[in-house]
Length: 551
Image (cartoon, rainbow, N blue to C red; front, side, top):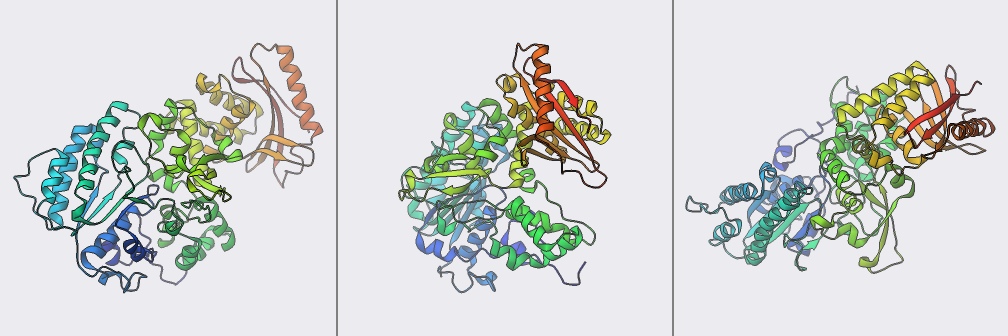
């Protein structure tokens, strides 16, 4: 490890005052806070989980409550435009009672309101016993002076996202939120500034009724308000990058390129011109550098922390799925309304939900359309982390298995590959296909069979490529192992096909491997080349016929 002192990288710390009192790396995102306050007074901001929304509210709370004295050395210092001190009420709707039903949620919200008003120095006496959130908020606000309060609300969508697969609970929870936000709007004379964050936008809460709230979520001026830019990586992480490259025995430029491929790509900009990295993933990647012997690794940091796997899998089970391969290869086109309009529970669709949650990001905007509401956007997986993680969730859905069970299938495939025995490999593939839901495969084409095998191999941390071209064509699947390389050509036998037809397809696949020269040139020193032709039967949903070529 180099002698240069590297500040500790914070993981999971979202309170600004705590970061100030410790030797933590702090990426300064305060430059636009003055502009924010001068330009308006009521805002909503949507960003994915683990993107710094709570830290943003913590900084705003500190600035409104105590001024900029703790911000010395940061960009906002001496530029904060609010001279008077404000009483700040800060809430988070990420309450465990959301899962216990609407009544429990409303009681918990009332309890939090009392605490938040007390912390802000406003009366919250024992006489306020009501558990009606609208009535309580009105009582809490009644002694306040006009234009004197700041209201900061985090995780505004969490109560409804918890109920996305339960219509009755969703509707009842929405009714509670509607009472709450309606009271906020009707009592807005008390509030000098309101800032609300969330991920998804839902109807029937009154939050998105009217035009008094400014939605910053896709505003180009605030696209980099949260998340790390390339400039941030260069300015704050260069010494960490050098140390990471040294420990990984990789060139610095290669580590930088991998960091970008894995964690960059989030686009919160209707013009499609700005990209930011997931701050959580970047921090988690570099965190081992703070330790003497640990090595960084490229992994699913944001996905593992965002607590969305179970909810997304349930959603896939109730809605039409979209395969990872289709999104990755073709992309999807979404309208401005699909990207940002609030949704009702019965209106939630997979692709807009993926876009609002950060799984999909804009890759290209149709700038020929000046009217933003009519603009269309080409979207794809935000980065490698999300593409690979979504693929794993899709596999859980396709197999209807928990993550540990899916991992067991993947481990069996990996073990079969180590044997370099074609029969064992084919058997492990068939075990996966046998576990796939009938609903998934009933209208499957060759590409979906191949995709399920490919995703399972990726889950096993095996290097795998599909549709790899050479000078004569494209091989279906290439698997790269430490000691061997396997090249597959698949054919599909429709339901009702005879054994004779299956053998004819197998011979066709063998000829294609030979004539197209698939796999030649892939061998490296010490690696064995295995070329395998296989026929997938729609009748049995198995690799029914196969042959290994003798080279």
